[in-house]
Length: 438
Image 1 (tube, rainbow, N blue to C red):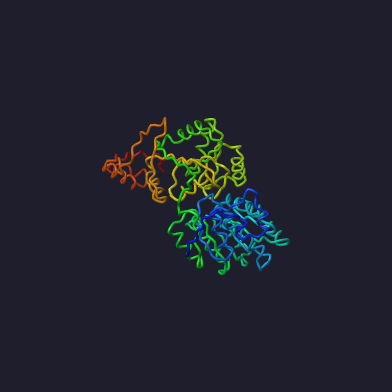
Image 2: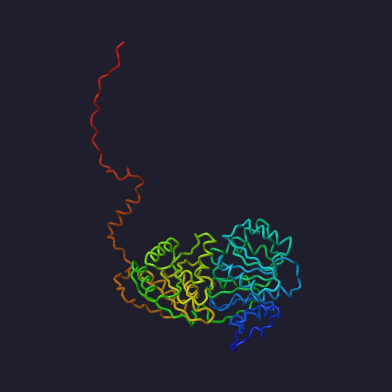
């Protein structure tokens, strides 16, 4: 596996892309980003690729432009699916699909993801079969596997496979589905893996998927973009919502993306924000897909000031000039922190990332520092005195209380809690018979 590095500015027109592709690029896109400069030439040669780049660095066009070019100028022209892009979330699938459709010349692109009526997707695939079949598919693993099992599409002609946000796709949640999907794809193909973070387990799985790959790294693995200004505030656990409201009201940011760990907590937090007069809404996996799309669209268009979300939006979602990301909870996984704060400072913009940290999250903070090779310092937030004490790791209960608790846990019913002392029985009183004598 070799490492490719280029240090000078390069225009898209210098990357051996066809005139058809270049003509469709937005006028503001003249110079390629670093990951685009590194990845596009390697992909065009047909090599397998492991690409590491910070989120917001232009990964979609880094793999998307050469995919489209290979389809346009390929030798197959079979009318079958030639390229497949796998992503972890519905929102990212729709975003990648829209971005590629914007620059596609004649390629038929289809997005397949959950949350959308499957019957409608099947109907669209049948229509494509009668007219022009999709040549490039962007999909989430679950929905794609459903459609493959029901034989609504074939991946037998796929020559290029992309894993976008590869580290997320390769964790235990998605990996079993990916292994089954790979059974439908020819082993002779070009495989491209793109990720902002790199864990040891990803590296091992990546090597199993790739054949003599080239490795390109636009930045150091697991690094945070230099344009993000980070702050970590030590806050009492019970004061986090109040501190968030105070920050939003003090700073008057036009947009704030707030990350929280639990869906239920997201809804509760939004109620508190709205009660405080803040225009806020929640977005998480329990929301209907149409609601999710509308909420995200409202946030992007500034109709919604504060969006509270789970890690559903931590992966690849692009929001123009998002000024600030706030972690109300630190994520349990350190790489997720890198992805979360990568929603700001995208495409060269400046951004702010604020994390509200309680004593109970000390281990999470330490893990983030170790992953990103930095010493992270906690600050105090004006107006919020910290009265909580760090946990000593010792139980506050006396040992005898623990034993009493264990005894209680062994009881199986209310009857078991009755004293075992024998109770003296009263002698039975013989009642006179009322039966009539014969």
